Length: 197
Image (cartoon, rainbow, N blue to C red):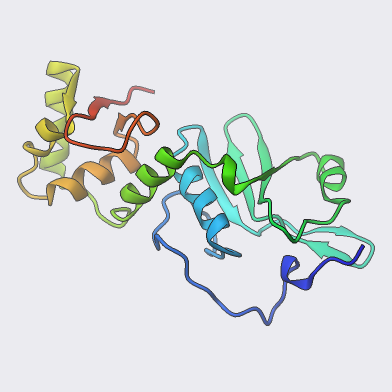
């Protein structure tokens, strides 16, 4: 079977930009094949179990063929490989080669991406470069200690130095606080809680 060169590493591939631009837990260069890979990366950034991920950082070889899966994902208990599932398939030897090297391999279809979670992840990641001021962070954490939970509307009122939405989103991305990503789009009634690891 002939595998298209677009699925293999090429030094001559043009750099493409996919949105949102910022990442939180990517280690190394940010390099996405397409918007599907970018969307998977958004989900990796908001997955509480993911410690870090990297783009196309592990070459796997079979004979003269070399292939780099979209992501190497590191969790506390294991490291595994993730690819977007595309019309142009990954080589058929990839899964067995990954297993031989000690890694599980998963290919994810676009249709399998959770739409609400993805939209919420993208909305948060717009604020990945922001950071809540120390005073705002302390105020919000103290309020959550006192009341155990707040709505987003209530939490936004705590911010004085930082732009409220940017501060709240950054505190979620930095894992100080949590809110549900799966039930509905983030709104004023979404519940905010302090994370306790």
